[in-house]
Image (cartoon, rainbow, N blue to C red):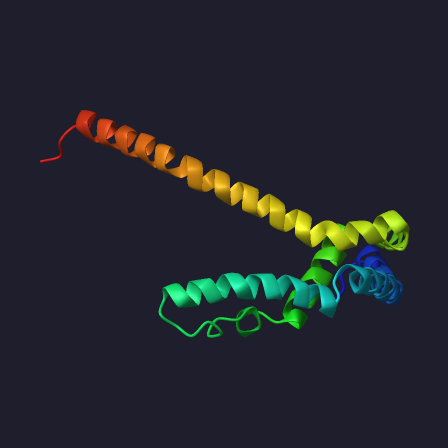
Length: 158
């Protein structure tokens, strides 16, 4: 039972605000879907997965599996990625920002950005993995030495 007029007023105002909020969310969702349609197309997915499938084929070969045994689409689908990305767009951008990004991606520079973004990300990831491979042995050695030194100085618990 509602105890006070103030509580009733708050509940009524919240109830009345729900349709407006739903309309705002629907408008934002529409803007997010429009942006995603520009940013992430089935053609872009294919381009990206073709490269990943080539890497997975090498992994399959090293595991004595058929080269086509491992495929990106058997692990994650275009629709799963699209749905997840849509949620991220909704989470991190306002409706106004979504519309502004969509407008930018319709410009020549925006279109070019979308075109090269997968290659840019791949080049960056490749560079980072090369650095990790180069630097990991020295880091592991340093950590092993530090761990051995700390064990040597630790009191015995007998």
